[in-house]
Length: 99
Image (cartoon, rainbow, N blue to C red; front, side):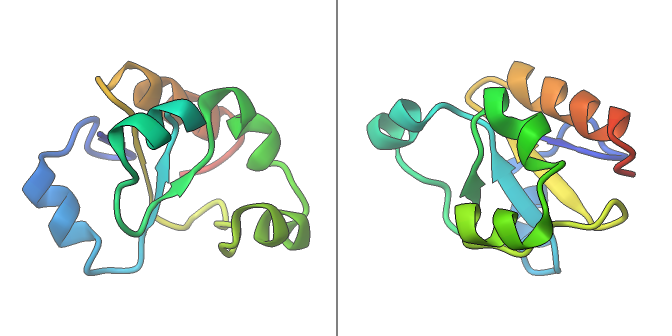
């Protein structure tokens, strides 16, 4: 798991954060979600779609992912299976101006 100021989070830290107003984006592929299961209260945006998704019109983002699009200052946590893709996702989001 990867989050802005904390490059990695424990499971318990994520559970605690989910009690606050964060957006949890799972960047695994859809087949991985089907095979290994969805993380509760997360949205799936595969890593290959993330840059485009984070640049969408907010209305389009809401229609596509059934979630309000995060602003550049909203807290966001990325997760994947082993942590490599979530770190890439953090890099993509940072390069797009997300803090």
